[in-house]
Amino acid sequence: MAKKTTPKEFTEEPRSDWNSEKETCIFLGQLAKNIGAKAILEIGVFEGETSQELINALPKDGYYLGIDIKEYRTKETKAVFENAKGKTVDFVLANSLQHLKKLPAKHFDLIFIDGNHDYTHLIEEFKLVERVIADGGIIAFHDSRHIADVKRVYDYALLFNYEGINLNTPEGRGLGLIQKKLK
Image (cartoon, rainbow, N blue to C red; front, side, top):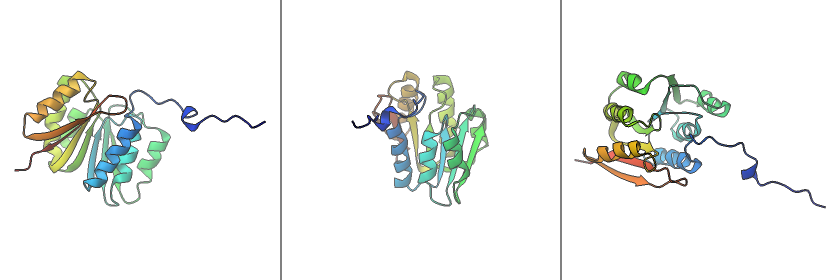
């Protein structure tokens, strides 16, 4: 009699609900490649599934900065951070509102926001992110469909010379992408 096997998707360790959907992580990595991103900022690293895709998408001389208020990264994520091969990869334990003020203006080609989802925090964070996004850069908001405060900030951005698309994701959480309109 043949031995019963369990499909791989049922043997993997459970994922936290705080992680972005795997498809969203992969999409963001592909987006980074497609726009030729050389500098990426991620706010809200958590376990780092998205970080891994973003770091791997960078060119050899690329730069990645991840900001989180706690250290949650998995050993797999830490390995990707440590073995970036020519890329500069930084992780900062900090409040994003304080750390964003220290970053150079118009520096990042892609910024992924998936940290604090409270409107008051997020609106201030968005205003700080506007200073550090490069001309033509893309800002991505995770949870832009199912968390009202995130959708509210996404909609607010569209009032200020941004074009955007709010994509559905496999779990219905949403990924809002915005970019300054060309003059």
